Length: 108
Image (tube, rainbow, N blue to C red; front, side, top):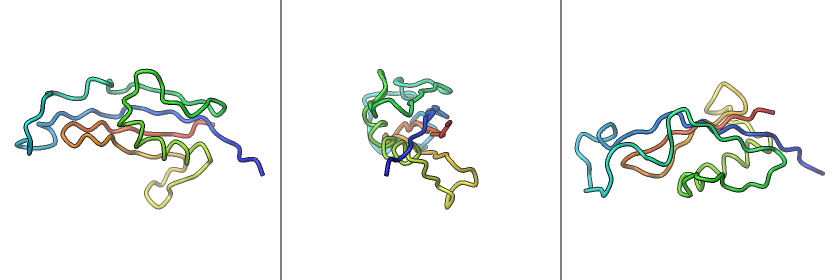
């Protein structure tokens, strides 16, 4: 049986700075402000027939988290136990001091 795959759109919903996450940072960081790897509203498209390769310029730590959601959505999974809308997921990168929140959406 061949599984049909779908396109997925990845949108950067919001980048947070440490000050937005914590009143006082729990550790001293070497960086300040929100993540500079992305911009709020930035969009990436992963085509159904494309290899599951990280887009140019994408943060590998964020990609590691997003990848499992991407595979599920491309395979037509839904997360209806969390979202009323089929074909979507919201997740964030693992940077606990300045997370980036992403929305993944199946578009075909």
